[in-house]
Image (cartoon, rainbow, N blue to C red):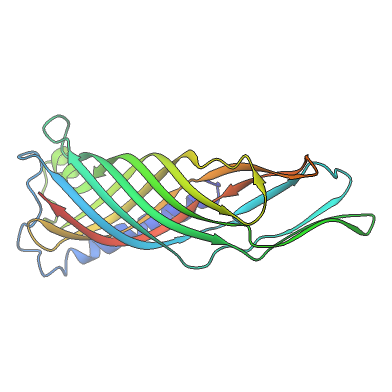
Length: 256
């Protein structure tokens, strides 16, 4: 993640916390304890989420290797609205650790279509290399083993105080495995279908029922792969396919 992305993460986290703290005073469920009893039972939670991804930078970067004395002109269009879908499962560790910690497993799917790119090498006012067209499309599956931290149960345990029973704020993070099925329009060599990154996210959970809750969350994950462009058996460019993205997702959790 770039350093300028960190303040954005902090601001989004503060916004989510503010929404939760304000909403607890206006919740129609505030007088009813809907939240599962942390620490008194095994907590298994399944979830489904839908949302969209946003790329902060160009999704591909090219480095000129062959024509070192020439200038590289590049224009890579980012995909627009990129939907994504996720299934999740988590198991509470309240019997083994202090309340508020869970182990989770996420499986998500997304599709990217990167087109309308312009790539040109210019030397001595002459165009040496030029490509215009689509870059690639990919079906992507992400697998994330993660750790959840649920703040309200943790605060209740640490300070022996009661928190709002129908709300919670959570944080999660862990290593992320990205699996791609590429359809390449441009001849990219060495592009691997699997890479390892990481993901971190946080959200607000609203309990609608003893076993059902709704959530909204923000997350950031990394997904970067290296490649080469070959011309006449000679590497012309090397570069990175950067599908690192922010996501905003909404969905439901079900407690077994």
